[in-house]
Image (cartoon, rainbow, N blue to C red; front, side, top):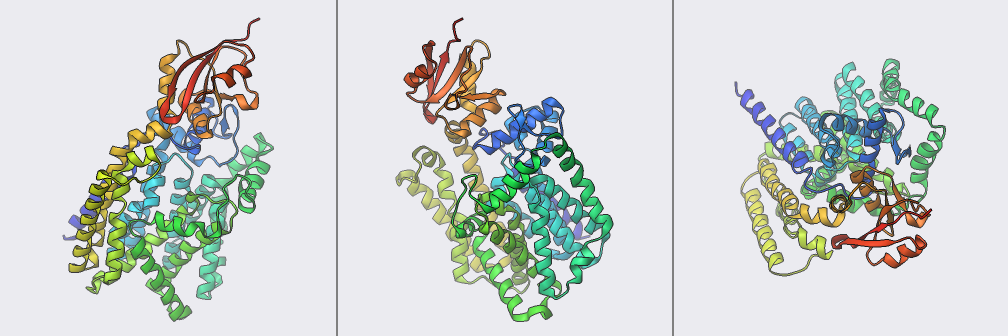
Length: 535
C-alpha cells in the first residue's frame, strides 16, 4: 500500500520538473547561433519537398548531419506548424526520454536512488541548456544513454529485450549524429570487459539478429542518401567526421584540457558532489581491482568508464564544441545518485568542505541569472546596486543550503539544490529572454523587415554574421544572398548590412538606387532597399 503514493509522487516530480526545465518558455526568444536556424530550416525544406532522405539548405544538399533531428522536427512542424518552438521541440522530448530511462534503470538496479538520479540528470546545466536547443546534440545524448543503460541491463539480467534496445538505440544514435555513437559505445563496452577480465562479454554482445536489427535501422537511410547524393560519403564521413576529428577544418580549435571546465560547468549545480562521487569510484576500482567488480561496484566502474571515455575521446579531437560531451553527463549524475543514496542510508552528514563547495556552486548561478539583461547588453558583469542585491540573495540562499545540509543528512541534497535551479531558470527566461531575443536572434530583425516591405522581396546580406544570415533564412523562409560572394540580385531587393554600409552597398550595386529604410541598433544592422537593374 505504501508504494503507490511514492510512485505517484515520483511521477509528479518527474513530470513537473521535466516540463518546466525542458519545455517552459521555448518560444520566449528566437533561434540563436548558426546551428539552430540552419537545422530548423533544413527540416522545413525537407517537409516542403516531402523528402525524408536528402537534407537541403537553400535548395542544395546539406550533408553535414544524419536525419534523426530533421525527422523529429518535420513531425513537429506537421503537428503544430513551422515555428521556432516547434523546431526546438525534439530536444526537450528526447531529454524527457533520457530522464525516464535513467529512472526506470535505477528502479531496476538502483532502488531508492531512482528519483535522485532522474532529477539530478534533468537539472544538470548541460542537460537543461541542450534540451532547449534545435540541434542534434540531445537526440544523440538520449539515444546513447538509452543504449548504454540497456546494455548494462542485459549484462546484469541476460534480457534479450534489453540487448535489442541497446542495438536499436545505437542505431538511432548513428542516425542522430553518425558513427560516433556506436563507436563510443563499443569502446566503453570493451574497456569494461577488459576491466572485468571477461573478454567474452564483447563476443556475447555480438548477436547476429541484434546486429541485423541495428543494420535494419541504419542502412536504409545511409544507402538511400548515398545513392541520391554521390558526394555523401566524402562530405559526411571524410570531412564532417574524420576531418573534424583529425584537423581544425571548421575552426573549432581548443586546448586539450578544454573539456575539463566544460564538463564541470555542465554538471552545475551538482559538480562538487559529482567530483566526490567520481573520486570514490576511482579509489574503489583501484583498491579492489577485478575482484571488486561485482554488483554495485561493477555498475559504478561501468559508469566511470562511460563518463571518462567521451571526455578523453573528444579531448583528443582537433575540433571541439561543448555539446560533444553531453552523452557523458548522465553517467556522472548516476554515479552521484548512488553516492548520495549510500551515504543517506548510513545516516552520514556531508563534510564542511563539500557543504561549502556545493552551496556556493548551487547558489552562485542566481547572480548572473538575475543580471542577465545587463550582462547581455554590456558583455560583462558590472558591479552596482543590482549586483549587490543579487549577490546578497545568492549568499542568503547559499547559507540556507549549507545550514540545511549540515543539520540533515544527504537525503535532503536533492530538495535544497533543485530550489535554486528553478529560481535560476525562471530568472533567465523571464528577465533574459527579451534581451537575448533582441541582441542575438534574427527573429525581431525579420519581423521589422516584414513590416517595412510592401511586397515580399528577395533578401541579401552584407558584412553580417553567419548567425544572422541563417536566422533570416529561417524566419523569412527564403534563400539569402551574400554580397561579399558576388551574389547580388539583379532585381529589386532588400539588403541587411552592418551599420553605416550604405556607401559600400551603393558601390557594389554599381549605380542602382539605394534607399535607407531603418536600423536595428541592438545588433548593429541597417536595412536598405535596392532598385532593380534598368533595362
